[in-house]
Length: 484
Ligand SMILES: *Cc1c(COP(=O)(O)O)cnc(C)c1O
Image 1 (tube, rainbow, N blue to C red):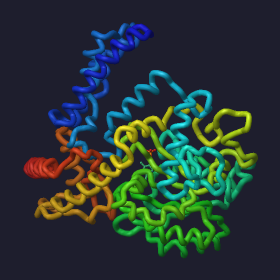
Image 2: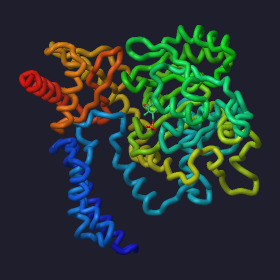
Image 3: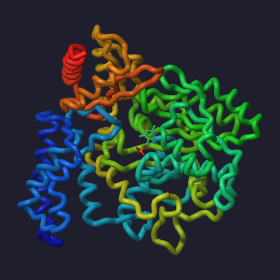
Image 4: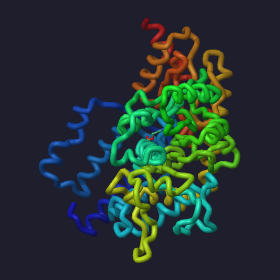
């Protein structure tokens, strides 16, 4: 394969044909979702040594290579893929990746990708509008508007959380950027906060003990009524609260913290309110489901992953601020960086991002929207949430299964009860199911109880697939039980 247009076209055609077959077979469920060979064996099968030493991949040999490669993937388009909260990518997002990979426009500096930069800015305004934080009259208005929100797309929710909490620190301790983080700062966070929050706090130099946990109930939802007592206690210890962090939704159970109440508390005590909406913020697009996020507009910052419920490939996340000036503080406390300098053509996003070189992230989401429209995304969210409720009914009504709660989102936990309530048994079940490769599911523990866990990321996953899953679990359980 030469680095020229002719060879590009030839190989792109071969690859797109292979991918089309892959997509079709995956969607039809004609194969296993996952077969995991040992990595050493895969390195052999893929002939990695040969390729790396000698090169020479061409339109012929790429076929064998891709056959081997694609066979050894997790098949997210398979209706039996109901594992992690990772988007089953819409085909349109793959086209965006293809274009970006071909032209490479890392657009944190406007000049390095004007079209992609305009798309990102427009989409950030679109997301802000969904929260009620956009104050312009047209989403393509990129000028500084008083009390407008602001935001940026990041390579993932973890970086988005870091960016948001840097902004929170800049507000309460603007000197931290040059003098270091003062040692009286803490955050109040749900006990169930995603681990990226803990990482952020350690990276920022507050230290892990600066996370003051707020108790959660049996289903991992923050007990907001404890906030006041926790707050008073840390105040008595002479600490300052940098932020209060809530989940929308919680990773383990897919349930939502009471944003309205937490928001009111933060307002009353003048505290920065950060909502980790990596998974759940997409419900803002649904007329039916957005009630789950009631109160989110009281936040000061929000993170929202497009690569979870907005069908984009990884990575594409947003960090959004109620007041764009807060974003400007995240990495610099002095001098506000202008979106539009009079002499400049465009805006540089560089000052607001952890990343220096940044992919054309907005294009991934743009292509999904351009294919489906925002209505299409709404339908997608509605159907996955609604299907999860149907699956709950089916599973919970089965004599040998139980679900600990009625789902709010597309995350559902359950366990198989026929052979007792042993935690290890549920884990064995999960591991056997994954090893068989017919289904991909996960597992989680809360309240000291181990559950099987599914996340319905695929609109093709229907009730009959769930019936087949239960059949498979029953079969596997029987085998494990008999062998003991
Ligand atoms: C997935 C998730 C994250 C992390 O986002 P990444 O994009 O994987 O870095 C953070 N918080 C919550 C609640 C999540 O579900």
